[in-house]
Length: 311
Image: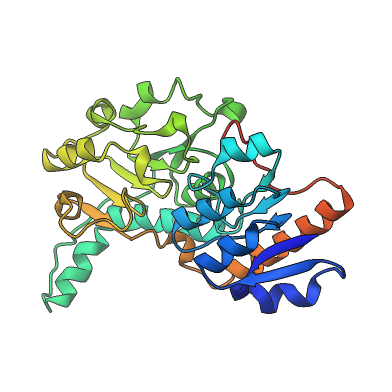
């Protein structure tokens, strides 16, 4: 059985691999493409999502694909289903870091710490705090109460924030996808933490921004395509909402001349939420090795993706 694995993780993986597994370690796009053609197992995450998808598509014999990413928009899910390939994702690997980033976004927005930093950069002393919102007794809507959304909720509740979640099933008192838009005007923080699927494209548009409180902030740590960015730019420009903390946008990188950079009260963090940690590869390796053992033994694996649902 042949596996194609990232050379970057080789020191963590190789000592714990089972005997008899043929492994090709790739360092770049072309190496991954060449090696995956006759592979059974692939972990071919690369910096450019398109390269990852291309490598996975080239693996016609793949029985199992592993990825560290929770979002799967780079993967040819229909093709994997047609081939009968198992896909496991990285739900949980970056959950703590991303949840912390989302809470940071709420705090930065509440206290307008972005403006505080700019004042300090200009050596301007002020006694007027740029942001004076207290989190206590505010309310947050979290669209997507999976691993990350649940961690965000736990942390916000510690600040005294009333949290309402959105799930497909409406479990545990959460709202269903057909219920939350009607409630948008009740929330101070609208946080996107759902997986990107065909159903979540442009989830927030002009109608949703019009329904939000003028004092409300959007916090997006999910995917850029979940927001109609033209509508967001207009909403920010006309002060229909207070602001947006955007870890994700579309496209990425955002072109230097894109108007979203200059939209009033938009705070950008360049998709750094999942990278703001030092243990990603350790966690990813532990998950991969656990799943490898289960795969070889024909046992249940962790984080198997529903290829129809897209997560």
